[in-house]
Length: 444
Image 1 (cartoon, rainbow, N blue to C red):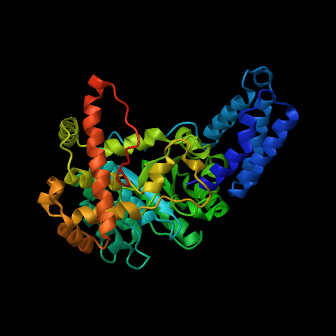
Image 2: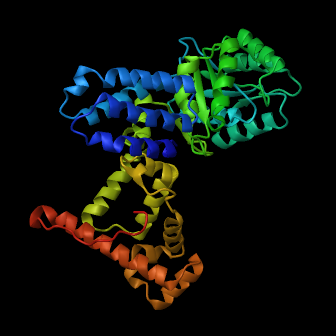
Image 3: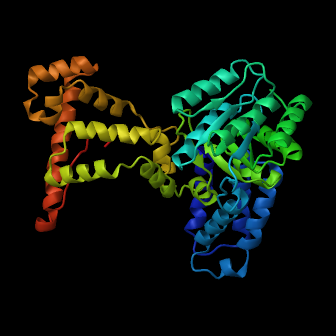
């Protein structure tokens, strides 16, 4: 997400950050490069020009010229203007005081509407709500079956009708929710390969019939400027309350995210960052601006960890660490917890400075896969008492995990070092010793 744009902006702003003095000329040169980077990211040219004009106006002011660190202050101005461009603050879904809240989801075919509906239902369920999915896409083959399958996997009810038209299905779903104590109805509507009158008339009829509290427009972030043009067409007819950018984990240059708010006026409320039901993030303009400028997004990383945080289990783990009784079974559990937070490359991208990895560098999860395979090939006793693993056991574990004996030996050596480190940490308060040269197992 924004990796290419982040690298280009970092390269442009690197020299400016360290300059003790700046002039109108070198600021103008820097901002020309920033504008080029924005256009390369498929940002609308009018949006890019307006953005640069606002930054330029603030950057050549007396406050900057007289600042002790003018270069860094200009970077802050760019950050602030990015936040303003993206929407300033995160805007939540508007819930009705009188249930059910109706959320109408619209967009083109292939944008990921149906998948987003399921993700949103899971997200709201995690907030203590009781959502109902309404299968009002009666035109696309298997659209209803897809939503029913997704709802079944997430244990969220889906309302559908055989042979019913979209408007009737949506209206009946709202009635069903009212009678069955479902406080939120998420209506999945039909899409087309392009904006057409028939689709617009149908979704407008659904809007009139259900009186939705929230209308969300779903758009594929990989379509760039086309996403903005489609959003404008939908907004003219529906006046949607918020946008959702899907496939932000793909080859998206970020232009849609940076252009949408400025050209349509509606905020971005969610971004899809993967195929899994949990791969949905609330859109925070300030955090996204920090990611774009390579400052990371630690708050979102912490939130991801807290969502999957088990206080009781964490307490038991802390005791094991204190007593130096951490086992390979515990290590396997931690690998699984980390995987549940999302792809490693996305998690690493939220850490400040990680955008500076070399061009083309990627997070290789194969080492973590090997560690997991090796531990899973051990017996329960071997995981709890690794010192009993002799030569013949190591050969059996290697064969069972599809790795080599050398891989098994490497893991055992690294895990032994890690246990020594934990013992030293528990004694550090008394001895004050420093740890040097301790290598942790891959992925820890």
